[in-house]
Image 1 (tube, rainbow, N blue to C red):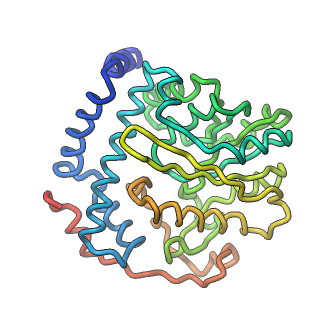
Image 2: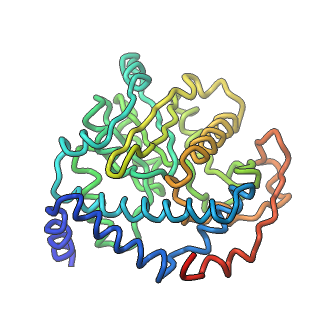
Length: 315
């Protein structure tokens, strides 16, 4: 089955990107208007994040999000046959802060959110920096697609460590100069063992691992955002968040990152992964010792009528 699927995607990837985008357009119409994949979740999330926007404005963001979401899969298919020269023309980055860190001889961490298209981004980065790139990721449950994605992701020499094996998996790289890439807006499996703070004005848990790892290993941290100037082209901005994370108070780096993420999302909301349930864990008073925000928990009421709206075929 693996070789059959790989062969199919490889042949499809040989088509020009403009043709693949026609497929993306057709899939978008099917996913958004007919199937309505996670449409209720997307619209509820947008209402939570942007209650000040009109319904029409949130629908516009949702449509752009779905287009970017499907484009990202089409662009991954292109990776089956394309080379790094193709990607370097389409994915650029401001690496001044990263270059300065490398010259210092230190390893570092990069914190980013689920913004498109991170699959192109890490492959391009491996060509643009002498750092050895190590990425912590969540394995795909389907073994065939996990094998396919792992092959694509590691083809440039980057190392991928499953999130559930991070402590052991990072050990071989601790004696070298490495860059650890972390998607820091993952939902924690256990909300009682997470930092809690307001995210778009509502309590949300964030994993502790990125901050704790930076402090333990004395790693400078960069925050990263990705924007999309036009279809098929991306640009990443990397900025130094802290040189010495271990001198900061507990939770301070996480608060700093979440405020940065909010700013990035507000600027280009259609680029973030709205289809995952970022507020699925409800705030409980028993989490009080994990609260790190200056402001107290202030949950906003979500308009539950949006659930019926989200499934309307012409929305």
